[in-house]
Length: 172
Image 1 (cartoon, rainbow, N blue to C red):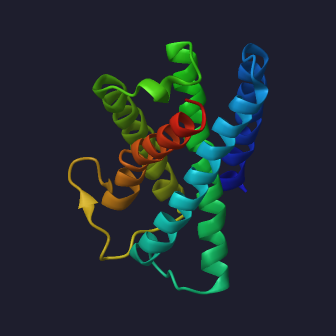
Image 2 (cartoon, rainbow, N blue to C red):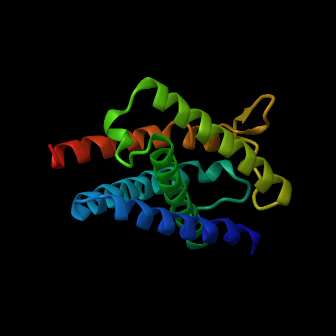
């Protein structure tokens, strides 16, 4: 049950931030297209990631039970990506901050995603929500799996870059 609490808060946070920024934007269609694009890209990329690194978790099998867990995790990952989008939107005072993605912003996304992953991954492992298989590469000193760490340091940047390309092509 505790595993579902965080996604519940994430959904509420994403909805509140969606409405907050929607009130500030003149062209609602552009805003909706932008947010939905990022959400769908995040959902697809995270689903692929979850399915590919599933075997690095103890007991994982490609059956409906485990695939459905991966789909739920990918949905939560999508929410986390949207929280990052909105959080940086607040920080930069511009929800379209990825349209001007500079090295300093990329580094900040990497640090934020990495820190969040380390904290959450260690908590989930300590609580017994999941266990790494023996073939999971472990990052020394921080004792978390390499693939979950890369998932929220590298993947958000890729998602935001693809989102920027789609957004810039659509609204130039």
